[in-house]
Structure formats: C-alpha cells, structure tokens
Length: 155
Image (cartoon, rainbow, N blue to C red; front, side, top):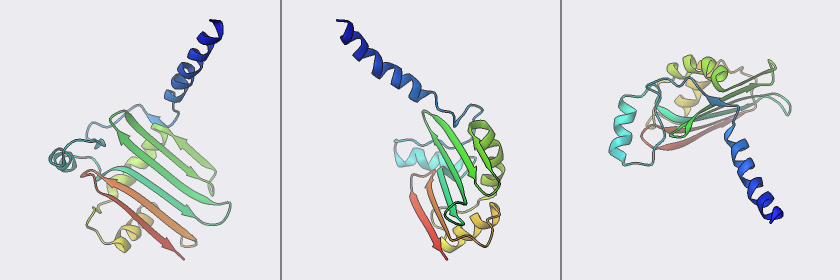
C-alpha cells in the first residue's frame, strides 16, 4: 500500500513542478491577444482589438555555432510566457523581465499574415536590430486570427 501512495505522489509532484514555469509573465497587458481554439469570428474580433498582431512569436538568429539571439513569446488561455536569450551580450531574460524588454519591440511590428515574407524578415531585422553578420534567421508567428506562418533567410 505504501508503494501505491508513492506511485500516486510522483506524478502529482511532477505536475506541480511543471506548473512552476520561470518564463511565465505575471503582469499581462489587458489587450494582449490570447490563443483560443474558438470560432474564426471570435479570433477576428480578438485580432481587431489586440495589443499585437500575434499570439505566438518565435525568433531564432544564428551568428555562429556559439552565438545566437532567441526570442520566444506565447500567450494562451493558461497564461503568457516570454523568454529572450542573447548569447552575444550574455543576456537571458524570462517572464516579466523578458516581456518588459520585448513589448516595445512587438508594438513596432506592423506586419500581418498577408505581408510578403521578405518584408516581414526585413522588419524583424530592423526592429530587433539584428546585426548584418547573421548566418540564418527563422521566424515563426501565430497571428491573432489563427493563421500560422514561418519565415526564413539563410545567408
């Protein structure tokens, strides 16, 4: 019987620890679009009143095998997460700290799902001040209307 209790306790503890995520944003802006699995009309309404044009944003810039710049942002019903890692400047930010730095950058991004790929990449490079010596840049975006897009440029 004791083993049975231990077996039940292990998944419970693992679930609690999984929920304690360090990149969760606590101070979520009121108008930040939230990923939903509801009807397209509701997604369209969310997109019209959204703080950003997207609910998910991922940026991966590789300068070399050891130097990169990574941004991950995700806003779902269960909460918002943000992370920024810049190996060149030895900067790693998570949660509210990352979102505070990313929010003004995100507000400058004006592209939507219909914007041409090269224009999206050029805008991200400009807004995030990506150095010209990058080897590759990958961007993944889930827009507030539910559309998912991937962008890539390799030098």
